[in-house]
Image 1 (cartoon, rainbow, N blue to C red):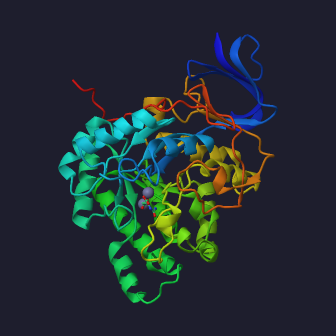
Image 2: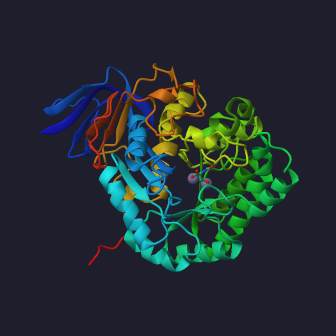
Length: 455
Ligand SMILES: NC(=O)N[C@@H](CC(=O)O)C(=O)O
Ligand SMILES: [Zn+2]
Ligand SMILES: [Zn+2]
């Protein structure tokens, strides 16, 4: 008995796009072949020539629960992901309370278990709680961070000494440190210099290219000293890319695997400082919008392998909260639902090949955080989770906030063309087909590598 058979589809398999059929059993991909005649499926999906590719794994989202459910919660955040073709997320710790202790972790886990419609990991926060990191690791956090080197939403930034000590502990645990790399001193200095300039784009100048570059450079020194596997969040500048590229090059020459990976966000790939006029304070995020030179370099870096993953940094804030002076408005933009649609659109525009898109939206995110080996995620092959989307690449349409499912109710990508999935399948279950058909709480917690069964 077969649960699902997808026919009349195209798959990216053995490095080429080709016609195929996919058989799904017990939530897993059972077979991928040209023709599967033996199956007797419960559900036959005729894709009518559309593409079937791995669903997104978004390793950087903020679902705001507990503490800020007016902005988002685990149900709306995960529904938003599902409707945009993402079936796995890793949620970051700057909630209220922040996820920095056993009790705050358990509180978040309970809420997520009750509400999430997709599978999820939870990251452990790193502040003054250095003595709690090993316990958080045993409780099952996916990785640590984002570790804030500078102030951002939630005020969890830490000083250099704690940063260095934290990386030492994370190395001992053999976990991954996710790093928000901006330099707090440079930020403060620039803020002082620009104290009379309250134009929205002053935010890009306060958190300058140098502000990110210096932070990445300092972090790389600590990483080299401690030997910690580290993942840079939302990289946005040429300067940072240069440093990360160099580290990868040196590692290769020395015949070792680099300990460093990085992600960039769709808002850094598809928006620029030109959008300040259109967006005003709604374009405020950390790190900030960059000029066209940086934006171009980022897409090149996605193609040449320097950028390993695309993650949304989904940071929902209400319109009411955003509608303030540039200094007072909170930083962050929603994006979990538009990540895959924008990346598919980029493929259509020949900005990157489909194979590379699949690598940066599912294969690499799974690999970096061990979701492939431990949880059968992010590999389009027999025996792996059937987390798939069916997309018709001819159906580009403008993004409209009122069609999205986040509580934010707005998007910085309004009216930009994107390709939304016709169908999202999570572990062999159709959870989106133009309508959400996912049961609240069906999503499963993906324990991290340090998880030890409670006795
Ligand atoms: N990116 C942002 O500007 N904001 C994020 C936090 C973060 O990722 O720094 C948020 O949680 O709002
Ligand atoms: Zn951040
Ligand atoms: Zn973030």
